[in-house]
Image (cartoon, rainbow, N blue to C red; front, top):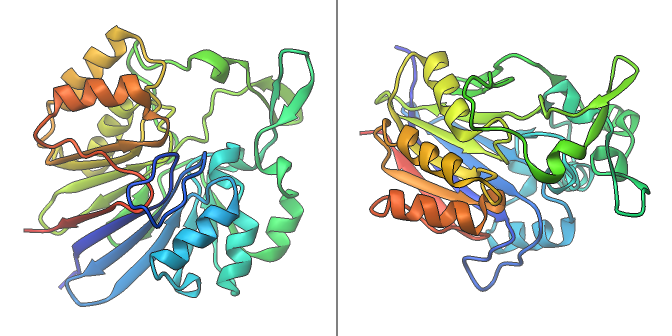
Amino acid sequence: MKRGIEEITITILADGKVDLSEYLGEAGFSALVDIVYDDSSKKRILFDTASSTPALRHNLRIAEVDPTTIEMIVLSHGHWDHVGGVMEILNMIGKQTPVLCHPQALSPKIIQDKAGKEHQIGIHNYFKLSELENRTDVITSTEPYTITTGVMTTGEVPRTNDFEKLTGRLTEIQTLKDGKRIPDLIDDDLSLAFHLKDDSIVILAGCCHSGIVNTAKHVSNLISSRSITGIVGGLHLHDASKERLSKTVEHLSKYPLTTLAPCHCTGLKGQAALMYGFESIFKSIGAGSVLKFIAH
């Protein structure tokens, strides 16, 4: 008999908001995912590595997490506040632990400040790609990637609606592709999807630059189920228009959600819209928050 996911525990290890006083906040995102199957087997994944390792290192200790038990690192995309801690976390783990991401997450991310000076805001601000490849196995895929039973990345998310667009400074970022400098559309954006044995689905997002509505639709199509019961993570709605916010609430209302827990780049505007739209299931989270999803 095929095994199924019995329980998922998501621990927020890094976020700008602190939920428990012992934790440190930082301008970045990282979440630890513990998966338990109905045959008692387990899997532990670190999703994103924040921007500065002092806070993440401290929070791992406070959460009593042994870094050596992390079996895979998944990067949601290549921006500084999600990839900065990769090398340090690998050193803390101390063994060959694969890093999974979209190939463009490892490409340069370049933006100009008001004075016209260029800045690297991706991995190249912290380490060279060759250093990472020499340190561990790097798995890249543009397509959905199955990590283990019931756990997959979204791969590139089709952007099919007309209201979830890149905004603000995001439109000014450039990258390199095939040796050419081009606008960065953040094609590397991906989320994690968990399919529990009761057919419920949980989505864990880093920044969701593809849009949470596009992402939920994509996950639903991938798994052939609309039973999305949980959404956790950054939803990048801090500068969203009123139209986008209202349409986001409208579209997400079509899923049987029981937990909506946005953080990181969701922002005050996004948090407020989602809180009023989903008051009974909305959860305010930050570093130290623990969310459990149990199959029924």
